Length: 526
Image (cartoon, rainbow, N blue to C red; front, side, top):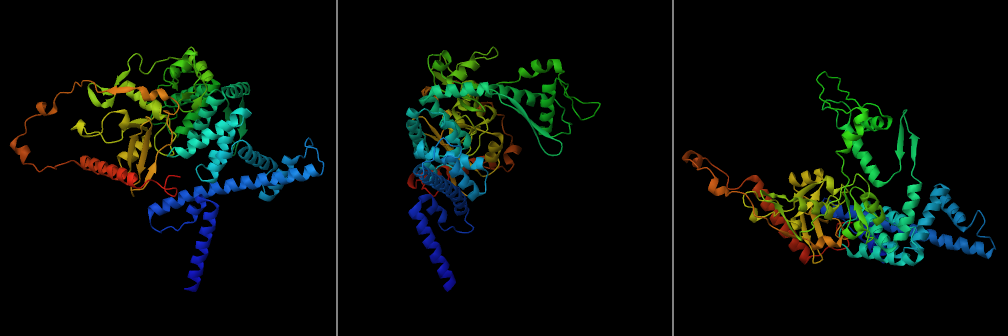
């Protein structure tokens, strides 16, 4: 009994000490109830916050060491132009202490100094567990070419977004956040960086194990998308009996395209149905199937504005980059809505199917699958009615409207449809959509913190109307029910209808809970 009491007291003391240092670490040190999924999930999230705090502490201690070494060398009269300057000397101490290479240590110290000198507010976000170490390194990289006058405004804007926007951040969305802000504050540095990257494009091979090798190339994002799609399209021409995995087929297709050799199906069957183009037809046969979506506003396309654009599957690109793509001979441009200011929500013959305009709008708005942590591009995703569409009574629920549609990759669409995960979506007064997911245990997790309404403010100006439907009155055209049919026992509601009712009730319950009990720092998401 005495040992248990001593352990409990020590744990309480540890938690109290962490609480004095950081709220993020206090959450990490809090007690967890065994067997409680919510508490367990909170503990997992708290571990990530703890890692962020430790990373911040490592960066802070590294800069303190640098200041000490620099001061000592200055006092001794050492020249900063010497090969072994304060940066090198400090990194050498870090390298030996952490048992890492000199190069890795210099990189670590460079990141630490960047956070202290250029991005102090972002550093505070790392300390408080709002971003991960990987997010932080990405922000450092995406802002390193900023000129001095733009550094503080960009640091402030990124930190404000991280602190004020509820939701989750993936590395892709963090990159888009940083790029969007940098492109708007310092487009000249973006242009210079892109010019250097274009000049430095190259190809390489790297030997790997077991007689294998990796080949790679750096190129523009749109060329990479076209090349990847061409390889995938060629690999798909093999028949269903091809014995190779999808990845092995794409590797062979990649080689065939590069070498100009014929791609073959390996099924070995006399009745093989593969329709594989000859090397001379590869370009024409695959190009027609390839579409790369680039989104920009009209002023950027016309050259009268310089707002960032969005390349599906890649992310934010500069206005100059977007115009370069627009001016390609194989590019087709199409306005989303002009000249109509009000667009149809769904197809007149089928209220379940969104109109072409709404389909495109949702994919532009969401950018990616709307599930927390997923970065699958929206233009290759499926559109889902957040509230299940009622085919028997469309007015009863699940309207085909932008407020109740979002993009989901096939996996997450199936996960929701065939299991007990429930999502919800709301639109705030600024036109931003926010998604929330409930696990089968009822744990609420916020969706992505940003979508493309942060990039394209004009998306909020579109209005939607319900077109006149061509559906006949189902009740009037329904066949008469015979006596034998009437006598058969039937369910009052189908299983799907009952499932949809439960989900609607759970969404309502979750909304009431979030209204009366807003999320606290220790709650998911992390």
